[in-house]
Structure formats: structure tokens, C-alpha cells
Image (cartoon, rainbow, N blue to C red):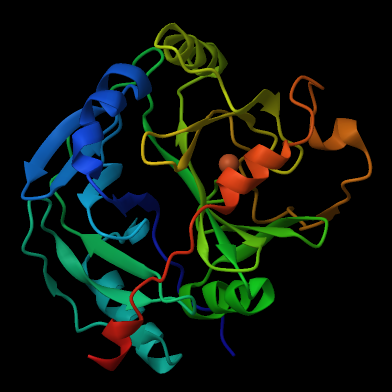
Length: 304
Ligand SMILES: [Fe+2]
């Protein structure tokens, strides 16, 4: 099999939960995003980077992911990538076409093996970008719980061109589609759900000041601050008003394709997993909130 075309960069994610659009103020006042667009039952939150939105809030009956959003450089890349998805047997939800929503763009959607919807777009209207102290600039990564870690890993690698960056014991795999150590990671779990979404701060000072803003608003991290082993990124996890885990991070390891070799990080050395030794292992409560509620995804779209 030839080397697959690679999915473009991670743009962000649209989440769904009951009354989620009523939580816009939390994301503006505490988390540090801005309201970019508001539609009927949906709000688009932007960061300081060029993406028109990073994190969407959609009112829905169920808790989970509406879609994970990736960018492609242009229509030619989009169309080639679309044909690769078809050739490799992905469940594709229609041919590339314009999207009719406040963000727009041209692209298509597919379902992953856990029935998560993935959207690929190009030709979005990008905005002016300027790093701002203590404000998130982009979505760094999305971590997914899955009952089939190896199968879903292989699908992301073979169908979408992701590459394995590292493993955490036999429980987690980190996948990249750019120089970022991971844009997607998978966690072995009893059912499919979202584990957490991480937002990138421009530097370590901004990361700490973001934690400070949350603290002044009455919310301390549910885990962290600390610095991970795999990816070498600082982390501070919080629980959103909808019960989803969100993370501030920064300084994620950048991968040199010519020299990087994936390795398995054992969990037996605490200092390798918690480099500052500030965080300790996750508590049972943290593990539970990262397991989250089962996300049914969109199996009905497969039949449509
Ligand atoms: Fe993370």
C-alpha cells in the first residue's frame, strides 16, 4: 500500500449537549475564547489564531461530538483526499460541496469506526491572528475514548494518513497529522466518548495565567498543572459547564519526521509521566469525568 495522503491540520471541534449554547459566557469570561458566530441552537467560539472557530456549542439531546473539524490546503488536495477515503472504504457522507452554515467552506464529512463525524474543509474565511497573553490560540488536540484502540488507530493511519507518535503503556496512542506531536489521541475504554479537548496557549506564562483566570472565577484544575511525558506538554484540566473535560496546554513537542521514532512510555516511572511531579496521577473522579458519557455518534448516517 502506498503512503496515504495526510489529513490537513486540526481546526477544532463542534460539541453537543443539552442547553450548551447557554454556556457561552463561561467560554468568554473564564476560558478566554470569543463568540464568533451564533446561529439557531449553535454558537461558534473563536481563539486568537486564524481559524474562524475552535470550539462549537450545539444544543442537542445527547452529549458528545457533533464533528471534529480538519482543514485541507485547497480543493485539489480535498478532492484527492476524498477519493482516498472512498478507495479505502470509509463511510463518506456525500461528495465535496459547499457547507451551508455560518462558517461555510468547501469539503465533505465521513464517519470513523466509532461513528464519529469528521469534517474536512477548505476555503474558509480566515481571520486576523495575533497571539494574546493568556488567551487560547488554537485547539491543540482532541482525545477520544474507544473500545477498539488498535482498530481505530489503524483506520486513522491508513484512511486519513495519521502517524503514530508514541504510546502511553498499552492504554493510549498519540497520532499526528502535522508537526504537533498529537492532534488526535486514543484511549482504551469500554465505550466511545470524548476524553478531552486541549487548547493551546502561546507560552508557559500564558498557560499559568489562564489557570489563574479560571481560579479567580472560582474553578481550580481537576488535574494539574503538570507536564506530561509523551508530547512534553504542560497540562491543566478543568470540567466545562456541560461536564466535558477541557485542557490548557502549551509547548507541545514538535516532531521531526526524519528522526522521530515512536516509543512506548511505561507508566511505572512517576517522574517520566509527571515531569514536574506537581500533578500526581489522575484521581478516580478525574478518570470518571474523562471517561464521560457514552457518545453514540451518528450510526444512522451510515444507512442514509
Ligand atoms: Fe491533552
